[in-house]
Length: 53
Image (cartoon, one colour):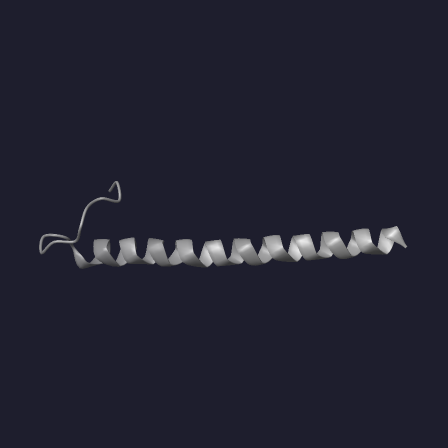
């Protein structure tokens, strides 16, 4: 499994399901990571703004 194989009639259903699940999980993890980064930047910016006063 190096990411270049395409599902064929020989590919078991569970293998196709696992490949699609991994791609789906990657999208979810990327979204969670982006949300966490934006929240971290937001809290850091507000903390700096409070220190400046």
